[in-house]
Each structure stands twice: as structure tokens, then as C-alpha cells.
Length: 99
Image (cartoon, rainbow, N blue to C red; front, side, top):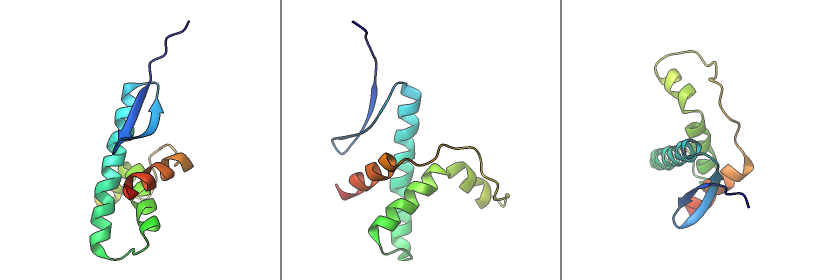
């Protein structure tokens, strides 16, 4: 019998994503924290009123935080290599925001 270690990111009592390494799970959890903070920040501006679009925008910005940080420092638009958003990730952030 094989033993397999898995790391589960849990938000508000619900499993959001499962990883095989602690480093990946921690990075995903941090990205979700950034997305939550961005969502609150953007919501205060009243620029985006649709809750779903707000969550998608916050999630996208959190995933692209390295590029965003460079842009805020006056750097070029050129993206830093990052993982593309998965539909499961977007669904996870929507679920977390609704709880």
C-alpha cells in the first residue's frame, strides 16, 4: 500500500484545493489572502459593482501580483511567467467570497 501526503487549503471550513507539496499549498493560500484583500480594496472604490466581476478581477490581480507590482513601480507591461487561472480556482474564490 502506498502512502501519499497531501496538503489541503481550507477556507471558511471548506476544502479549496489539494496539493502534493506544502510550498504549493502555502503559495495558493497566500494568493487567496491577496485576492480577498484586493476584493475588499476594489469594492470600496465602487468602480466594479458586479460581485462576480469583482471577485474575478481580484483573483486575476492576485495571480499576476508580480507583474502588478512591477507596473506600480513604473515598469513595463511585460508579464512575469505565471500559472494560468484554472476554472476551479475561480470557482474556489467565488465560493469563499460567498461564505
